Length: 378
Image (tube, rainbow, N blue to C red; front, side, top):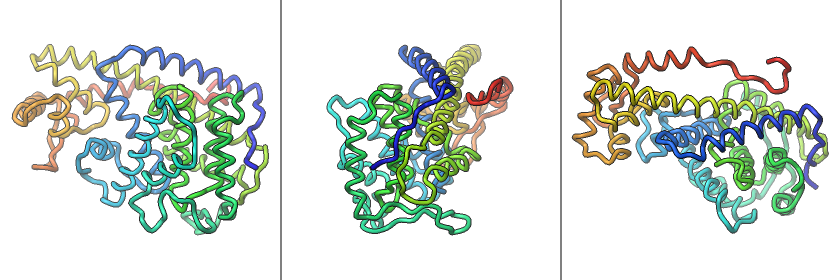
């Protein structure tokens, strides 16, 4: 028996309607290709990876995560954390491919494969295979056991039940609700020795991806869950329903409500970024034209706007330039106060210069607070 899907209340249905409205708006905007789409998608994936890993205590900057995604050495992140980032990136890339696969059914093999991609570098944690014994989740600050997973003997059967449900259960339930319950049941089963939280968040994204909600990077809530107090709220929402041990019941509305709120808040953030991307790109095009710079400098400037860091190798590869061309462009942008260089040789990177800082400050001043959908008038 799994944890059951709850009945929604009018307030939840209203929030769902608003999420769907934002989804349709995003889908409409994304239907027309834009020159900034690739960089925006990559940054959203980097932020999702950052969020999911920070929940587990593996912290890295968005800039370093983007470097890892592009095959570059991170400038600040330790090799141990870089391996976690790379594993998460492999798994989420697989999620993206599975989301659009024509022939697909959930099965134990795909879930175990995702777990292996996620933690395959931990050879001592049996990656990709179901745990052989009991498992306990502890409070990292106190060491206290806050959750005990089901007995190992039950796990294969519970996974089979979850897979059967993923393929055919509660198909009349709103898709955001199904995705939330997939997340909850997998993390409650805790089938592997490690990576269960990251796997459950990835499964939630995959369920939505299979529903053709949006591409995974645009429908994931992993970034939102990894932000400061949101992580505390996330664990609180899980513990409130789990109550310390595997004990399936149908009182899961508080969890679903937590996920709906997260989807709403993250959708607001993504919609704002998408609108801002077009405005920023056009502004940078105007400035590049005004100063007589090559149009290929616009992607370089946009990268620094959204990520605060650009490396010569990245710019060179994206624009198919020679090393000399890329170096000359970046020197010119630095000389004109768009960029500021830091470091030497392989560690050299370019951050926002005075002109870019003014552009960033202008846009930051216009950002309005997000609206909590469950709080009237906020």
